[in-house]
Image 1 (cartoon, rainbow, N blue to C red):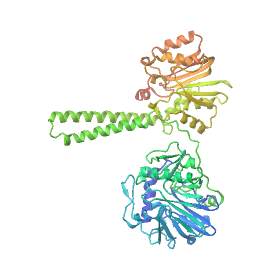
Image 2 (image 1 turned 45 degrees about the horizontal axis):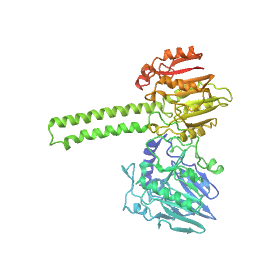
Image 3 (image 1 turned 45 degrees about the vertical axis):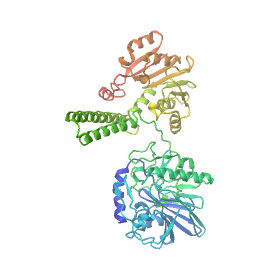
Image 4 (image 1 turned 135 degrees about the vertical axis):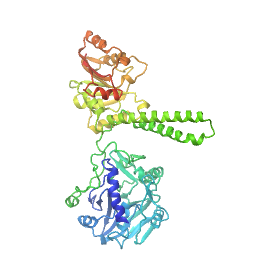
Length: 552
């Protein structure tokens, strides 16, 4: 069954995970003088060699190129006497099943006592949130059943067995010679560090996160710093990276953020896995990838919240007949009408928010946010040694763009970073600046209503879609407060929804600025083709968007 299951996974998972940056396998090669790996599509199997003894960690798929790639490494399948199995999934035991090529018929299998219940059929493994049951694994190899904390010796190689349930009920992690930690499918390395492994493939995600906390604690208490080696996403010796986000789970339904540009588009395409590289290059450690994450102006939580409301109302509509059959017909009809209206309203709101989310996304096709940010930043010109201020900097996008355009100036970004935009905060701004390689920018808390700066402090001021969100305050007064801290001769570029209902008469405001000595003052509509079309602006409720630019 292993061959069929392997081919099924190759077809289905290739489609399901393509382009999302979920799987980032190492190519075939050596990590160091003791540890090597073979790439099998999206998975890795590992070999630990010391003083002539070879231990294999996991057995991969029923993979037709396994013997070939082991030969690249100079490892004879017959030299493998013991195989450590982290868990029994198809991509970890395939080469041991009865219908496999049989490269390791004489090897003993080391597997956890609980995990062995999958092999006996006492428990059946389910994935894709329980929707798909994996085929029963059948193997004739002799087994060594182990338990949590057990220590084995294979000649002078020490192996400690650490139970880490969650992905499967008996998942085992193996610490070899206190220097190499083979984690199987417990940890997933993203561009910004380790997470609990993929949500859709776990038996219990909550338990998986608890297991990782236990594992991290064990290593830190014993002051161990092993190479932490994962089954699908490479290795790292930095515990801060490896355990960075273990309270969170990798979401298989979404493209990863921040996205790792080193991740293959399709892990089943292996043209970059070559004999030449396997024999000439060491396999690099996973480290933080310089990938900024500016988040989205339309939070995904809002999309999901409206979708949940639609689902609840739809459930109420369906249940009304069953739960209210003893009520008068008019009551049932009114109740169903209310639930039906709610379903339509919440559903429409969710669809509209999703449309906004897609168009704003930095990873999407439209990339409207990126266009607006870069377009606004292009109006900011700061002399060498000068200073600029971004009012309401959010995730730092505009401040960073201005800093890149003016490398000899210093840019300050301020924001209240309120709970309504929980994904936007000072640390995210700083992380994004670091990811972009920009050092001439800083971020602090501040409020557009009253800027905590002296008059004429900055050589440029800028802002994007901020003031219209500040309720209860005159928008032209907010503009005046921003212009107060601008030096004479300094430039400004302020982008917002400047409709008459929100801002009053902006043409009159422009005339007032000119009368006060401001130069080159222009009110530029951005909803007439500059950033977006009129129809798109109306559809997105951004009609009235304008850039106020000029020089003080």
